Image (tube, rainbow, N blue to C red; front, top):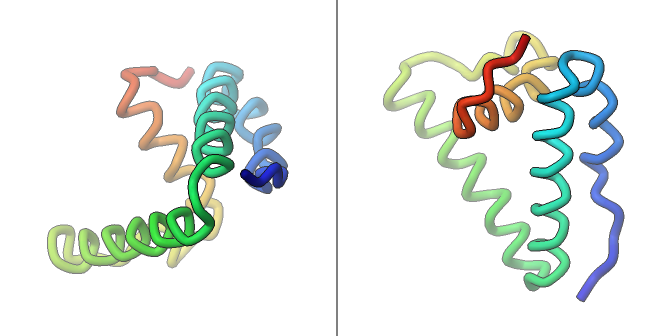
Length: 94
């Protein structure tokens, strides 16, 4: 079991600046992800990361027929996860 600090936690203040409720939601997501990753073998975390990116690129190429938004604007690497989290939970950012 590892105890590495989740680097994603360093970005959480940005979400709180955008919307405190989105910040709390993303903090919960990072905390749960860190707990799961700490109990999973390292290869499983890397495999999930690679498979997730593969799904994203296949989805954009095959279904949307356009490139991901972050290809044009790197800030979408932060916006995308927050958008997905708010969509999944029904939270409407202010």
